[in-house]
Length: 193
Image (cartoon, rainbow, N blue to C red; front, side):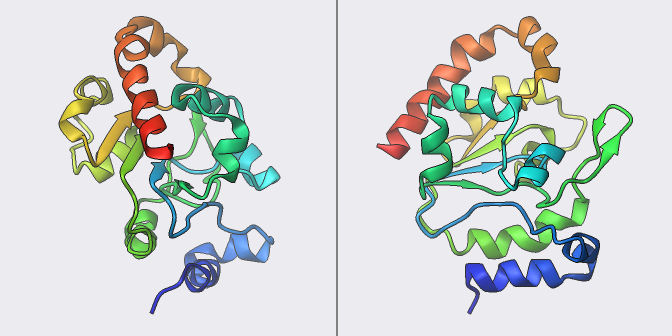
């Protein structure tokens, strides 16, 4: 039978992750059997990987603001889980970080999800998580998905990535902070109450 520790060790020993394991870099995610709100994002950034603390950057600060929770609650609550599409920093690309490895989530997420029976809501952060979990073609615009977030409730809540790079998007789409964020905060408060 799978356990969290067994899977963690298997991830470290997987040949696809050997370069990280040999460099003493552990997979970065946070799950428990008590998780009620699961956050699925892209992959750890370089700062997260170096500090061993996911969402430990301006994107994380904004995400916590959107959820209306403190840093302490975010990191200390066993009811909040973080399961990125890849558990390792993928490297730097031409315009930001490289995407998560495509086969990674398909290999590890189902086994970890099976150990979290109390999940009430899965927050899909950004394009990679959203398109994968909602089984949508990459041609479907994230803006349209987020605008129609209600169609994916009560299981999923898709949002844009809270990266400072999305500042222009937020200025062009003020409805997101006016209409969507209050609902996200209400759902988060309900789940964590």
